[in-house]
Length: 132
Image 1 (cartoon, rainbow, N blue to C red):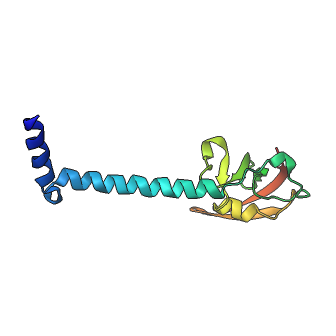
Image 2 (cartoon, rainbow, N blue to C red):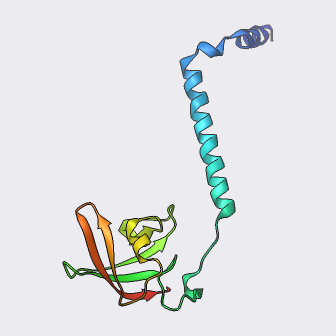
Image 3 (cartoon, helix red, strand yellow):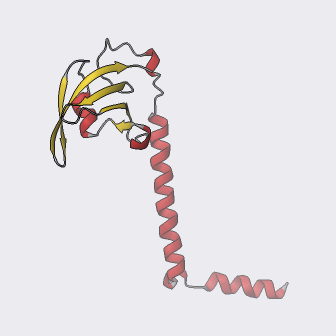
């Protein structure tokens, strides 16, 4: 029991301010707590949008799925416009803040849009707007 008290006194008198591992752990903990607060904030403000219940009269809006044709190559692609945290190009989901989504919002099937790409402006024709 006396050894435990000595050990406890020893830990209480340690100067942890000069311990690099302790400082690194505190920084990591602060980062994690900040990230948790950020995620909690996003979660509290999140809204679930069911694309099948949208009534946008054929207009491209958030959560809609858009079928496009690249006018230069003839390649057809399909993208769903989603929030930044959901974006995943492998799943054909583009962020609402991406250049292509910004160019598409508010447009209709049959419209041609120009999208600024690293190699220059690319033109796409909107073939269809789906709410699926």
